[in-house]
Image (tube, one colour):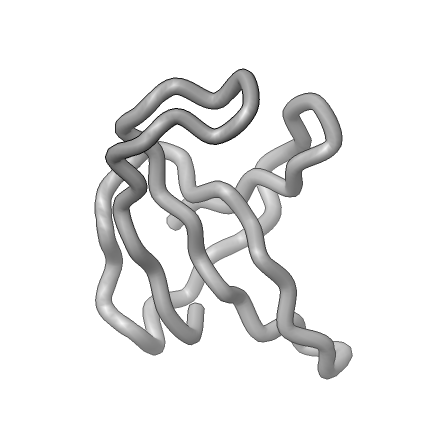
Amino acid sequence: MWSSTDVHLPIGHRLPPFTLAQVDLHDGPRILARLHPTGELAPGTAVQIVGSDDGDVVVGP
């Protein structure tokens, strides 16, 4: 994981709090994903894709 931040404002149908993370995939691209469970992680923490939710990629430790 490259970076993460907690969001405290509603965005669309997403109600706060939730965490967004920028994740570097092994194949090269960096994606924006929702972190589950919510909570900031330190940069460099390994995460994996755990699913999707209404079009959002969801990652977790």
